[in-house]
Length: 257
Ligand code: FE2
Image 1 (cartoon, rainbow, N blue to C red):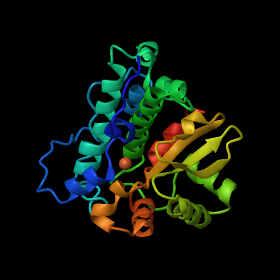
Image 2 (cartoon, rainbow, N blue to C red; image 1 turned 180 degrees about the horizontal axis):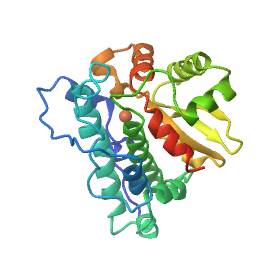
Image 3 (spheres, rainbow, N blue to C red; image 1 turned 60 degrees about the vertical axis):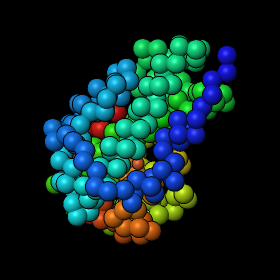
């Protein structure tokens, strides 16, 4: 049986819907204030897909003024939550043979299993599962006490991989700005413990790339910054790097390689 994939399922939330939300009246959304530490992120990615998102690791106004509560209410409460709803709807389709094969798999396993598949159901599941993963990774890449110069093991690797922090910072800004359209900028580490800065388009995620482990990410989809910065992506990513990047999360991810 052929499964019909709606546009919203395939893309999570479309631009028209986003812009409609952007002009809507105030959103009242209960965003969790409980911490989502590295262990909780690992539990999300290594467990079967949950029915509800884990709470954000901080209060929804904790990243202001760099990222406002207004942006987070849409980004987490509408976009991220929408990807999860779409994913669960796809996985719970009793008529889908693809969904049947994915039953009980973890979020990471689902992403890997559907990567580069050509059928519409697998493509939709891949896009939505990767976006669930990428956004959870992104929230953990940010901290109200983050930013500034790197610290710990990640600082050592930055110096050995990029000469100095200023060069690393400049390259991360450039990668974020140069990603055409929607996507993500990532700091990853390879098996030789050399850091790389890469970007991925749309929902793509480095966990499908053998030999690299993601350490930090920055969402450069317009929905991540347009309410606060309009078209000024460079200003946004520069502020995120300087004020929010969570070096503790990067250092915990380094422990897993
Ligand atoms: Fe996003």
